[in-house]
Amino acid sequence: MNAGACRSTGAALALLAASLTAQQATKELDALLDQLGGADATARSQAFQTLQRERNPDVVGRLDKRIAAFAPAGQQLALYLLQQHAIDTTRPVYTHLLTAERPLLRATAAAMLVRHGERTHLPLLSKAVATTPREDRLQVLNALWSIDDPAVRDAVRGYVEADANGPLLVAALALLRQQEKGQSDATTTVVRRLQTAADADVRAAALLWLVHGPDGEAAATALAALLREDGNRFWRIERLLERDRKQPAALTDALVAALAAPRAGHDVAWLATLVKLQAPDRVLPALRQLLDHKNTEVRNAAMQALAATPGGLEPKDLLQLLRAGNAEQQVLAAGVLRRMDDASGLPIVIGLVQEPGTRTAEAVRVLASFRSREVVEPLLAALDDGKVQVRQFAWTGLQQVLGDLFPYRRFAFDRAGYNPGSEDRAAGLQTLRAWWATVR
Image 1 (tube, rainbow, N blue to C red):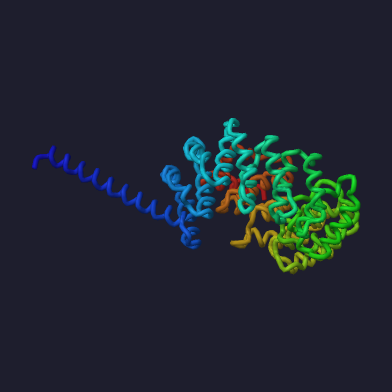
Image 2: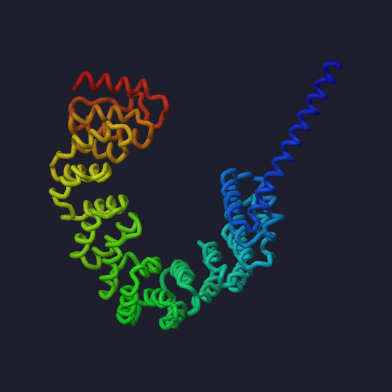
């Protein structure tokens, strides 16, 4: 066989191999989509995770032919997968779904197309929203973000009914408040009818909506009774709480109780701000109780809130945290003490910055605030940390410290050859260490 024939045969074999590989990939993709659209919840979840991780662009075209036949749970996951891809790729799928039998599919597709400029689909969207059965309404509401249209709002207002469940009602009212830039008379009129609903969570959501209206005091009193009846009810309606304004006095105990029992660390800051606005004398005691909370994030958040409040942390509290707190609390305590002109925390922060596994960007930032010769070596070491944020904080802090320590011996940091974002830092570090050796 001559060379030309060999090349032709080789090319043919390569094409055949590529074709077989593509066919196998298509079979594997179809198998995953079969599982995604099937009734087995475990297989469906695993298929979704695999497809989400791989982000295969071929998914879009395959879903276009399959999604309408999927089980409802699989359809929702398929919609999530479509959102991973650019609208120019998925637009044909959404366009086809505008005629789907299930209102949820029509509403989600129309919302996506409207969001990308095709506002001619707004009438179809409002109709799909209005005809969506109750079990699918939460999913529809999640698809309506940034859609601003009176007819769509009217359709969502139809979800505000006495036999709605609590989560659905809260989600609908939260969306309406966002779209109406507050509370419209139309929505408030509908909400008033829910004050006698059978579901206590529905009544609570309605009352919270009404606490800043003409009958606000009565609504607040009734709501306070519902919250005393079930402390967790607060968390089921808190999305409707206006966090930037003072609440009626009847709700003070409920707000303090929520601060005393947060779900996680992220609840502490906003509740502390609200309680401080509501009852300034009650915020510090509530936060101090959280310093012994079993959740580390809650303890740290409480400490941060106390540190940001005048008189929130006394020196004795800070010294106790320096001795017995976790690393994050020790760093925060050391920083607060330094602002009180107490350098007790310096050795601890130096130890944390030098010890592998405990060096964080915040520890490096606090270390640089001490303006002491003792911090220079640890900061120089942190310039070669594996995390870019740590290196950036060390670089900024080192310039501040050396500028304060040697105001008349300026070093041209911009010509040192060091860049915290670069992988090649050796030469710059050598230059910096050499300069420090001459002045320390």
